[in-house]
Every structure is written in C-alpha cells, then in structure tokens.
Image 1: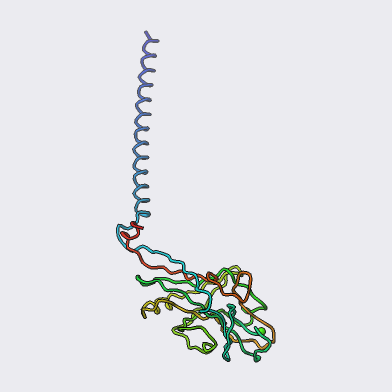
Image 2: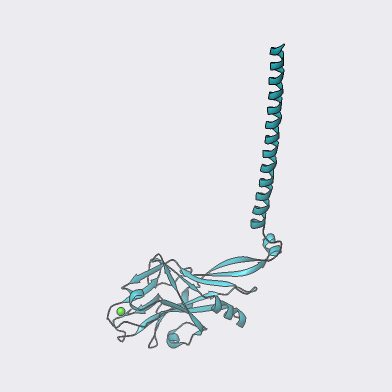
Amino acid sequence: MLRAMAQQRSLMASADMAASWQGRRLWLILVAMALTTAACTSTQGQESPPSTGPFTAKTSIPNEGGENEGHTPIGFPGMGTGLFAGDNLNSQFPDGDGVQAYLAFPLPQGSAATHAILRSDLLRTRGTPFDDLGSLIAERVEYDDFGPHLFDLPSSGDPSTCTVIDGTTITCNVTHAVQAAQDQGTTSVQFRLRFEQVADNDGQADLAMFYRSDSNTNEEGLFTLVVNVPLSRGTAEER
Ligand SMILES: [Ca+2]
C-alpha cells in the first residue's frame, strides 16, 4: 500500500516537472520569437531602400588624344605631342621655364553632373616634381584648336589640386569645371595640367608624364573623366 502511494506521488511529481518544463519551453519560444521579430524589424529599417528618389549613373569618358592634346611651354609659344607637366623638359628652354599638358574630353549631354573626377593610372615621373614643384593642378581651359598659341591661355574657373595615389595614379576633382561646361552648353571640356610652381631652377628635369610605351604620344584613354549624373529610379530599372 505504502509502495503504491509512493509510486503515485512519484508519477505526480514527474507530471508536475513535465508541465513546468513545457511551460518554460513555451516561454523561451515566445521570447525567441519576440527577439527575432524585433531583429527583423530593425534590419528592415536599416536596409530598406527608399521607395522613391534619385539614383546615380556613372560614365567613364576617355580623353580624345591626337591633335587636340599635347604640351606647351609656359613662358613662350611652342608645342609637343606628349603629355608632360613640370620643368626642364628641354635643355634649350630658358632657365625657370616649365611645361604644361592639355587634355580634351567629349562632354555628356542631358543630366547635370553631380560629381566629376579626372583620373589617370599612367603617371610616371622624372626627377622629383612633387617634392620640388608642389601639387599637380588641373584647371579648365577653353580652346578650339590645340597649338603653340595656348601657352598663356587664361583658365576658366578655379584650379583643382590633384591627389597622387600609389605613385602611378592621380585623381582631380573637376566637378565644378564639368558643371560649368555643361551650363554653357558645350559639347567638350578641356583641362590643363601644371604644377603649382613653374620651375625650381636646378637645371634638372622634374616631370610628371603620362604615357603607355612612348612618352611622345598622347593616345586616347591615357586619362579618364568619370562623371556621375542623377538617374530616376524608373529610368534605372529600365536600363
Ligand atoms: Ca628642375
């Protein structure tokens, strides 16, 4: 009799424990579901794109190359085909004179640019131009035909200081120059590259040069003009 009562109490205790465990398990499941829901809500709030708004389209435009580009001395009329900036390019140049490079790009029509970068991955140096002559400067110029007469062409707008990356890449923010050219309704945009200081008068060449295999060539694609324009979402989805 006593043994039967003990077995009954044991079964009742086991039933209570099972009920208690199931209760805790149910509670834990509910808590986990609540946390998961909160996490999903938070993630969706951070990553959901806006239902409307502008998107950006990026266009990379190679420089034209050829007869529309090259270099001139800074102090007197003259020209050459290579893309050089610096000093003492030629021993015949007057001491203290320098050279500057001219570049041309077709200009994208339509939407106004929100950002524009002039870039080259083909920088080579002779001497120490960045130590001796300061930063490389990109400035917008306007010309119909490249030639010796451009040696003292006034610039249009403010100059942009270029940044050297990894020794062979330069980037220059030319957003304002591209926007100004677009505002004028032109079909092309031109830039001049020069150093802050014309020369260091040491009689040694200090040059930034841009070429693939022949320094006297200025073929297409030595530079790239990367232009961002706003794009509506509908247009972006159609592309
Ligand atoms: Ca020099």
